Length: 527
Image (tube, rainbow, N blue to C red; front, side, top):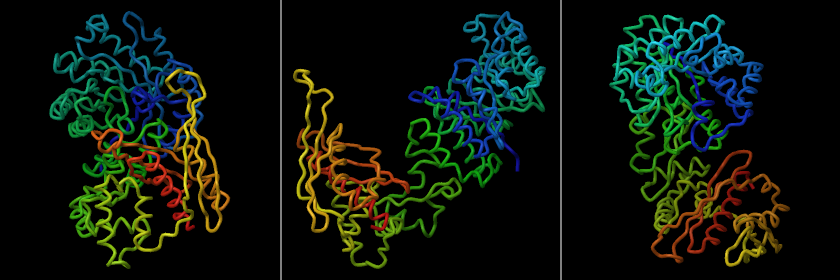
């Protein structure tokens, strides 16, 4: 099978995504993870643009990478400046990276209106920059900026630019669809024209997703002869993002028969997606292809019942190929097959309780009509199942709780820096406990009070961490009497789970979700 080279630009283009700022340690950790995944080239950024990137190139050269090679990014020499006298090119050489990726203009209008120079001078800048870097012993990738717009406007000049880079010795010419507006049929035709004009020259592709076609455009370029694909993990990038390199890798391997990271490493796809997202302090979109939580999730009862018999009808590939898993969602659309499968994933065999299964399903549907949603609340669902089956044994019971919000600062009518205090009265076995906890919000205060009360009996609670809290008003037109849904996400050393509470009272809904969170956490540990 043919090999396609993978070039990751998460550390540069990905960091241009709104909301993403990577520390030096973040960048080095991502390099380590992508290297283990089998990425061929990792672009580290501008080697002299800021102290962080200077330190990055100093430290990354000491890392014992097993596969990936590091590229330093820059641009062609400035107009009117000889390549050997250009500081930017000197910085690329001094970075210690074995690969220099330089971006150059290929759109005639950009040359004359943005660069403010002549078409001939731009050709000189391209050729001299590539030749200089090659003479320094570097491998050179020429990023042909705005190539597709340039080709549409003036194909002869766009080709002249990439020909200048090729004749100067560029190892790869990566055609950049910079503004994200091209469509796959255009990309395929233009890449094919370049391949015919530059026989034997390695071509790559770099796309943006402004029209939603970045991955499709990348695959179209491969069909036309490109053998190197650029992208970012999860498609992070400026504006609406870059080509999602992970989706592209999966498509190339599973759909088109190419080799990129190989089938064994492909099983890391989902974990790589999650690792980089977490490092960037972002979330993997639920509906992300291949790696999202919903990529192989099934909600309709008919689909779920047929899945076991004919999975190919509802899953375009095996989820385990990309390190993901099939999930059964329990909802008002679900049938018995969905419920049985979901219960099994929670360690509950409903096959032993055929009479109760329909009753459980009816109860779930009734609860969803009230506002519950068990798709994101495995913990609450498990507690509900055990309650129906008569196997639920509460670890504690509530007598009462009270929450006070106190604002000590004199700010007139408006509160500022208010603190919450919660007092709970609970029973563990035959013993009664009263505990008070404080927090910046009522849920945090309740959580702290509950932990104070029960940790002496269940020290495992100390390892549970409340990591997310979401509130949704379900019937906004009712005003203050609206039904509120609270979803809490909790994490321990073994995993993450969600729980839910629904009530007209947001504190009551929060308490119920919190109780399920602790109860399910203890159930998972066999308590």
